[in-house]
Length: 87
Image (cartoon, rainbow, N blue to C red; front, side, top):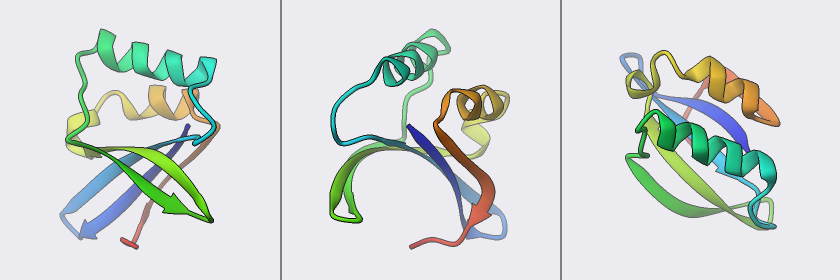
């Protein structure tokens, strides 16, 4: 799983958890367990094509994950916690 922070406006950010299209990995299962344990649900769940591959995306509000971002970043294979501009 990769983690990205996207800035929509200066006051509004979103967090994306991006899951590998080849299927769930043991790490992905750890992330799902963490989310369930802390009763965190994505605002939106969808698929998105990137670089010719279709990824499963979990979309969260930035503040919603307050107190959990570092733990999730620690589970991620790649985490960009610097705010990105939207695609």
